[in-house]
Length: 155
Image (cartoon, rainbow, N blue to C red):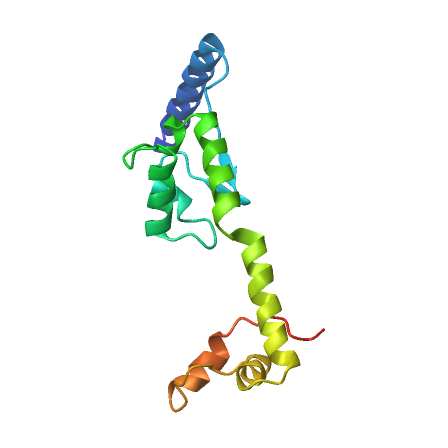
């Protein structure tokens, strides 16, 4: 009955009891608030401009410009940014940029317009072919890797 699993199990349960008693004494654990911009949640532990670059349509340089324009240091973490600054960033993005679902919708409409006017690019979109050259060896790879669901051209 003195097997290693038994001792390990006892240690784990003792650890759980200590953790539970510590939590009950200190009250509810302080969980950092998860901020969401353009339906993208920002990771609390990341630098703000790096987390902001995860929003569809914003790259790292643009995210850094937005953070500086709203008065957020490039060394500041998301969990340290106040709610008022998040609202300022959200308003700045809405006023000056097309991001997220709105950008995806715009891209899709542009592709559907190319298909409707039967442009060469539209036809190649419809058939899932590469659009800008790469016709010999890479074309088969482009066909396999092409994600058609975002650009669903069947109306």
